Every structure is written in structure tokens, then in C-alpha cells.
Image (cartoon, rainbow, N blue to C red; front, side, top):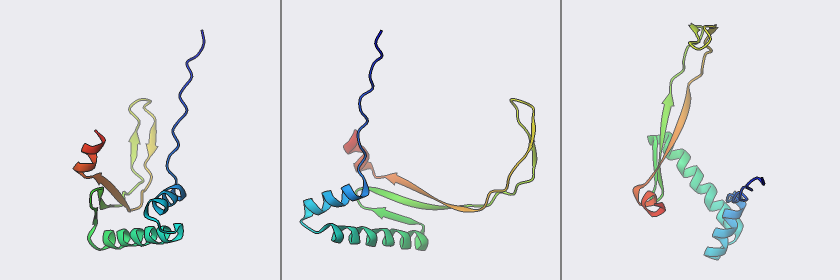
Length: 109
């Protein structure tokens, strides 16, 4: 019996391919599109730091959540094996959640 061949995976859009596509569609230079992209990233970063939320109209909402540190050193037992272990400390960190807007979800359905 012959094995079923998998279809070739579709290539994902890279950053430079995105810049090239936007430059071609808008009639601007690729460097101008890259500079605009950098400005957008800076605006998103500043707004997330300031208010914890950024809305990209028609695309998505980004939310910033501060995850607190978890103290380690606690002894626990693995239920599957019964082996005892000591938990590790985890530092506090930021978590960014992206929620697509309803219009985008509906357009893909």
C-alpha cells in the first residue's frame, strides 16, 4: 500500500513579504512602509504601557495583563508517579492577549 502524501504546507507571509505587498499596493517605497510599521509598533507599545489596552480598528484589541510572581520552594507530590518534587520560583511578567474583533471573525467564517 502506498502512503498518502501530505499536501505541501502553505508558506506564511513574512515581514519583508508583507512590506513588499503593502508597498506595491500603496505605491510607496518599501522603506517607507517599514518606517510606518515601526511607528505603529511604537504607538502600540506606548499605549499598552499607558493604559493596558490598544485597539487596532477593524482587526483586534490587545490587552496587557501583569502576571504576579510565584514563590517556589514548596514540596508537592506528582499524582501519577507519587514522586515528590520542589516547585520553582517564577518571576512576574507581562502577558499580552490579542482578541480579534467580531467583524474580522465573521469575515473569515
